[in-house]
Image (cartoon, rainbow, N blue to C red):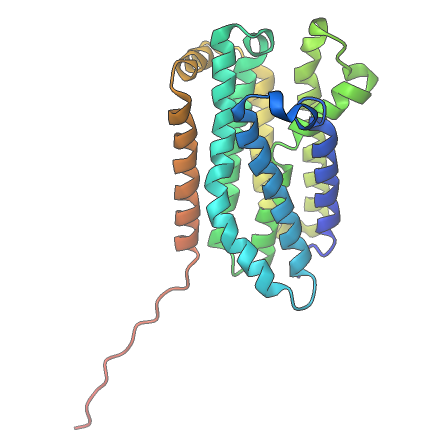
Length: 275
């Protein structure tokens, strides 16, 4: 089976998620908007699921469990995309309400999360479509923790790495550089995977293409007037509609990927009566 030690790297991703989101989410669990729970809970479960998938694939007798977890991912994925749309929703609501961070970085956040959602839809659809080709399937599934890994890692940078540490509102200008540097590290990891596995690493390169697009959009296009218009529109749209839109997109990706990966039907030849 491919990537036999991948679950160790997924464990590292979980540790970074716990450290990065501890101050702003896990330690203040009861005092955050529902949108954070809609994203945080499901995204954490998703990474744990990828960990379990990787572990069961490389331990004898665990393939039935691997398949059960894989089937469960079909039902979890719509909630994962809906959670990302919940973050888009809270970004729009904060922008309309005049939240300083979202007024400054709302366009960058919107483009980054939207491209992240598009990346998840693409790689999960392809993971399902090619689920009978183990290298391709495993690569696409293992690429999912890398997408938006910049979010917890950039928070670690702003807490512990001197050039990025945020002490107060005056340091909000450091948020975007911390995110862009985190994305650069993601791309470096993907480049290392590509160098080691060559043609078998195509799924990671697909994810890397989306991450590169995020870097460009967030770093250079965050102040586009059209993004501000979209933020206002989202801010004035009922949250349920935004969340359900994401859920519908995720459900279509699950259904479409599963259908695309089915074995082709073998036609039954009509019996020919002997002359």
